[in-house]
Amino acid sequence: MTNNLITEHYDVDKNLTANVLAAIKKEKGGLENLSVDDLIAIDGFHIRGRKSTVELAERLQVRPADRVLDIGSGSGGTARYLASRYDCHVIGIDLTPSYVHLAADLSKRLKLDDKTAFGCGNGAVLPFMDESFDIVWMDHVQMNIPDKGLYISEFARVLKPSGKIALHEVFKGKAGEPYMPVPWSSDESTSFIIHADELKAQLTEKYFNLIEWRDVTEISNQWFQKMRAKRRANGPSPLGIHLLMGPNAEEKIANMGRSLADGRATVIMGILQKA
Image (cartoon, rainbow, N blue to C red):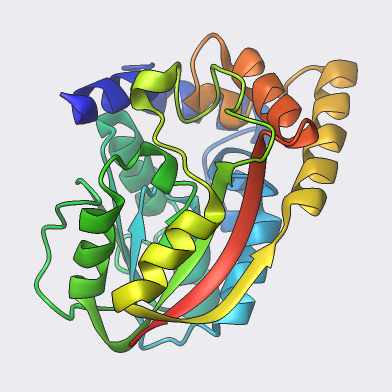
């Protein structure tokens, strides 16, 4: 039931692929000869967009031979960036059918469907064999996971010995719960956000050794405020993450910015290795 509510929150546009393609055509003048960089505006459905993806991948030191699992893959932007930049193979899973369809369509158009694959899946019940992946990538996912212990045990199971997790997550701040609605939830019924130290303790208690755990709240807040100011001045461009969030996208984006500014949300980038 919870997964259905989460899916309903995200699956706001049954014509998402067609509408995104129309926005790309309007923004870029056509759909031919698209590159990964042409899709930055729609692919960065997380704080700081492409910049945070590049940062985390460089610190992780992704290799061409790596098999990567992207949990909560959204429009597939992270998978396409990793595949194009590092020549690795990436499988993305997401609860939201419209996101999965869009991700697969865009990857095919960019001729990256030999390096990427997408399917509907639950991060807490992974449909993969033990020790299948070198890297598990998580970008703004844990807020929708009710059972953190089951979630952790699952991605630990599918990681190879000494495999790594790359984590870029939003957590609860000291000032209280985030303002609602936000990009990951319309209300408290589908938000399972916790404090960063709680997840870190669960990760390192049994399965993982900590390599890096960086608080990037301040630079995330600065980025958000600049982005909000730009949107207020110019309005959203045809192509952007608002297409993934439905008619109240601006309210969700504004509340995320307020939550960061008021200490109701923190952001962590981390790298951990399977013990």
